[in-house]
Amino acid sequence: MFKGFKEFLMRGNVIDLAVAVVVGSAFTALVTSFTTSIIKPVIAATGGGNVTGLSIQLREGNEASIIDFAAVINAVITFLITAAVVYFLFVLPMKTFNERRKKAETTVVDPTDVELLQEIRDLLRREQGLPAVTGLASESEKAEVTTDGQKK
Image 1 (cartoon, helix red, strand yellow):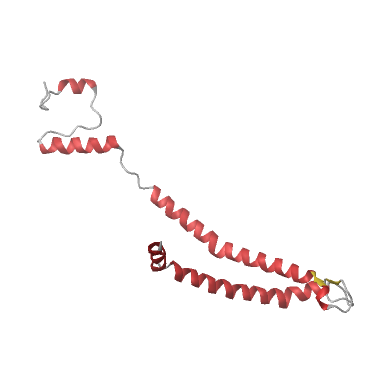
Image 2 (cartoon, rainbow, N blue to C red):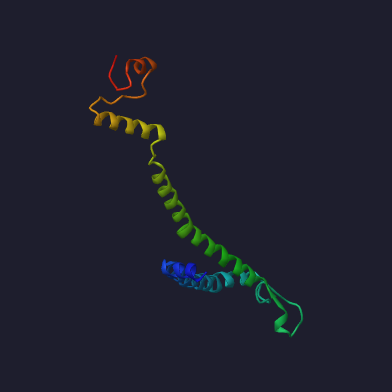
């Protein structure tokens, strides 16, 4: 159980994961700052001059009873910006890279069993000093060759 965990730690995935978390946190802070400082005031301005943006106070005098729609819209915009940047900067390029790598790997075709057997046959014939047979021998060619490889 611990052996697998140790191998995971030693592969370097933990470092990659730590870097991703730090970069993700910094990026989220940047997007949150942008939406809080720029987007949220624009949303709040649509509420009119006598209200505090897009919010409703359920009970007068109780600050805890405010429903702030601007904060919800702000969170949705933050999520969409973060998701779009992660997709277009990380997921899509990695997907393209993997597809190209997979395509390059599939171009190498292993020989079939028949081709391997033909190569072995040709090597054995060359070792015996006989000419290699090109392609598959026809029935008439097979009939002309005796068991010792000599033609009749």
